[in-house]
Image (tube, rainbow, N blue to C red; front, side, top):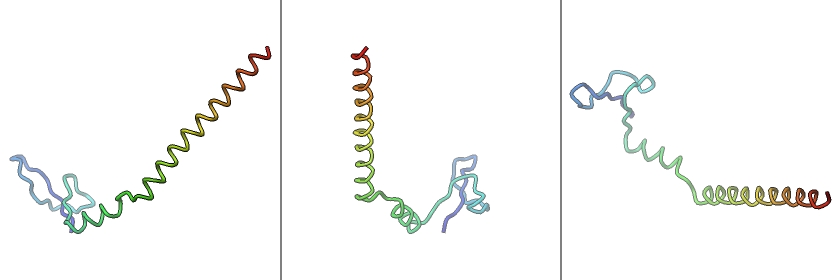
Length: 80
């Protein structure tokens, strides 16, 4: 169960009476909640591979389109 905590004027961490939704300090979670959250948002190998391929593909496509535009401009200039 998550608990709202605040740091008091002496520097100690104290449990607050605020609910977690209204907490203005720190929210402490149990180890089970932490692991559940970390496991949910942990990157998978397929997700990392997909992101790499999309990023690499975008660089190749943008590079090709840029080079094509430069080639067309070069041909137009040579015809003048």
